View (cartoon, rainbow, N blue to C red):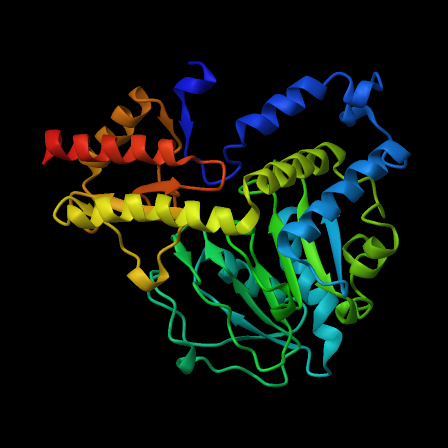
Length: 368
């Protein structure tokens, strides 16, 4: 199939904007008429310095990042930050404790990793299933915690925070790997934000970290040098060789986002896209089932079952087979939960979603 015959609903690595891929293709062999690819370029060169600085300037503009925050481009993915966050921040207070708001698989993994380095307080009893966000009035937050951690959007279970948790002055840490730049966010409410690039802001290989100045330089002695934010800040994300190509692609995505109107425009578009799919599911309640509470439904990752709340294996298999014939790829749910999942990141267009919705209605008509 040609690219224009396929709609990629993958949860990550995910669809990239056509304009970004075309620009990268155009510059693949010779970037800016230099005769070399970005992949061949020295990270110490003035040309790459322009690339990484331009990416940072665009990001600061898109998110209105205050001057007292540093921007880092690191490796190791979100999983690497599961370790880097406690190694850098647990020392902020003598108790070496952290509060974790666990709403899905990724925040659960982050909490488990943090337990290696200090005391972790999960702020409410373990949930039977990840389909909701308990009311914040039920949370047991520790005022002496070094930080409060949460995952803003859980890709596997399709659970997303529609609010920023109140921590009463304790630094707030957010994993925004799957919803950064999908809507405006007040950076000043956070101590640290990190995001793997491969969903909304680029390709796999680079992890964005936005960290407040006063949280830098407090790493535990055991912290590996490459994970110490102070080292990376001092070397402009070049303590080790950075993922140059991934940073270049990220910069192109930032430019694309700016041209479309930035995070505010993305918020409006993403709301319309997710509402189109959810309204289709809700309008056919005896056929499609979304397990997530409406208040916690993700705009990015829509999880659903077919035939019954626990899913009809035959119908779901047929749905995937027919979807493939229509050019839809990566609609299968995560192996740990099954079912179906449509990921609607920024690069997914309204037309892509309309095509999916039409298919869902047609599938219902034939198989009800």
